[in-house]
Amino acid sequence: MTTENIATAATAALSTRAIHAGQEPDPTTGAVSTPIYMTSTFKQDGVGGLRGGYDYSRSVNPTRTSFDKQLAAVEGAKHSISFASGLAAIDVLLRATLKPGDAILLGNDVYGGTYRLLSKVFVPWGITLDVVDITDPTAVSAALAQRQYAYVWVETPSNPLLSITDIAATAALAHAHGTKVAVDNTFASPVLQHPLQDGADVVVYSTTKYIGGHSDVVGGAVLVDDDKTAEKVAFLQNAAGAVPSPFDAWLEIRGLKTLELRVKQHSKNALAIAQWLEQHSEVEHVWYPGLESHPGHDIAARQMHGGFGGMISIQLAAGGEAARAFAGATKIFTLAESLGGVESLVEHPAAMTHASVSGTTLEVPDNLVRLSVGIEGVDDLIADLDQAFAAIAQ
Ligand SMILES: *Cc1c(COP(=O)(O)O)cnc(C)c1O
Image (cartoon, rainbow, N blue to C red; front, side):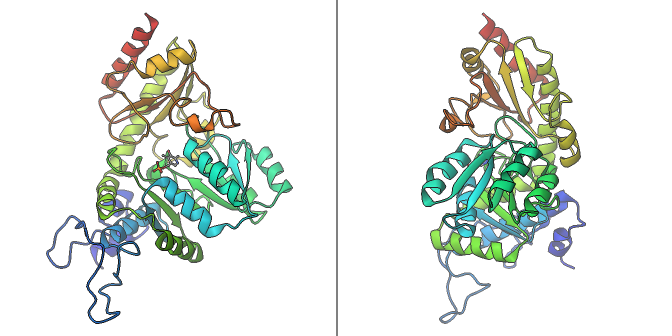
């Protein structure tokens, strides 16, 4: 057995898979780190004489293949297909598998960009989009009984309110109606949550976030077990071209190798900070699935393994103005969109990541502040939040 075979076995530990799957040392030189194959095209040994199937880098590139094998092994999925962004992954998945006249049932708390893509691009293309509280099985059942949906689209934990959906229960409901379940697993990452094992049909990632993990690359991926779906997605990826560059793929490979270590530390730091915030008089509400006060805590405790992730949202008692001031008053937490990097970030969703859902049923509270808790020393992070509360109280 080669290292690769051992590392891709589902019985290998997640970190073993992350470090070795798809990472066989370069056959020519023995390079331990996968080379960045910065080439658009590949020499053919006579017409059609491809070496290892490589012809043109929109279709296939060895660095990307290495990342796809690595992420598929970490997820325990048969196929992983990587993209130039998370939204490109979602776009290609849906265009490859839907046709005008089909319908999607969407949760009422999702990443603003996902809602923008669905409502502003897919609806005009002829897709029906219905929005429900996806965490509520009664509401999901009622919707499924009303209309035939191609997909139930689940984000859990959701962005930005960290609501929790029971993946297995939702899959059971959806499958009874011949509907597929797609899970955006970006917040949990493959370390904490395994939607395919829980019954979902498709997993998507913005690999920009925890998988890349260092705020230095934008990327996405679609993961499925079903060969036909993978074939359709790969076909449209090649036909339309939203591929990650070899360098992007290399950054994702490097990030994924340390994902488990990082996510466990993100989760540990976030839990300590959420517990501290819950005691703070300036804070009206803390949204973190690791807190017993969270309405989805019991499901999260069952469905997430080894932590509850690094994302926390808080609502400030003093309102929207205070939330904006707070987001600008931290010193270690950097005011910026995005999440999942080693460094802590803070943002005001209503004006930033979720500005595109303003005025819709997905609108987020104006007094909400979202924290992406990094892996710095937790005492330094708490001290930073404390000084920001003090600064805005003056
Ligand atoms: C960021 C994000 C996306 C979009 O990914 P990009 O890489 O920015 O295109 C999709 N879903 C969730 C949950 C996200 O946080």
